[in-house]
Length: 246
Image 1 (spheres, rainbow, N blue to C red):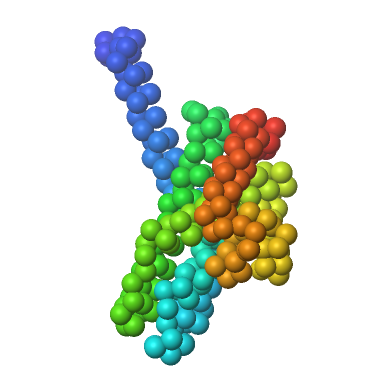
Image 2 (cartoon, helix red, strand yellow; image 1 turned 135 degrees about the horizontal axis):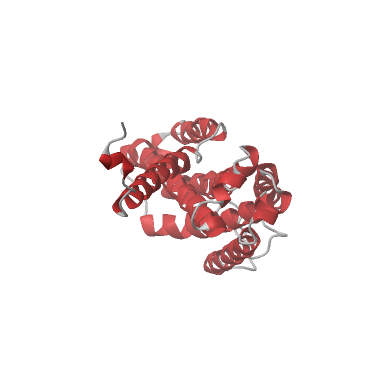
């Protein structure tokens, strides 16, 4: 016999409760996936490279340590790291073939883009902050030196934004992370070899090779504007949706 309660249709609150429970599970799944998708094999190499740079700094005599030497070594890798991270993160839907699932979620490509940029920013800040703390404690403090943190932000921020935009746009155009990785590393190597002669105001290694034609402050503004323009161009492409993400 079927009970009288079973015969009755579900109340309006029951579908709402089921919908809320389903939405909650999806939200948790998104959070877990978005946190895990940021990390890959490339991130295992980063601590080793940073450790080598730190070892090179510490190998010098204590009385020859200077804040400028620390800044030159920070400028060498930390900004470029942002481009490498975004190149890997922004293309994860292609490498893991999850574009179809991701694009059906609320917000579509715009939400996906914001999450990817936010994840990359947080990861870059964590890595850069850890390395800066290690430089301060192991390199500067024993020599009783201080590092002007405002100068650190001005030195690293604009080129990091420029590399982020370059890696972002290159990965989208190539439709693979390798495109962004090669563009980021290639621009860095080209700047290193040429000493910034052919990069003009978009000079990302200014402390290592100062330019007579461009002041340090001018290059910061050019890198800032260039990075924003590259990000804007990449965002427009990413916003096209399935045609570019799939």
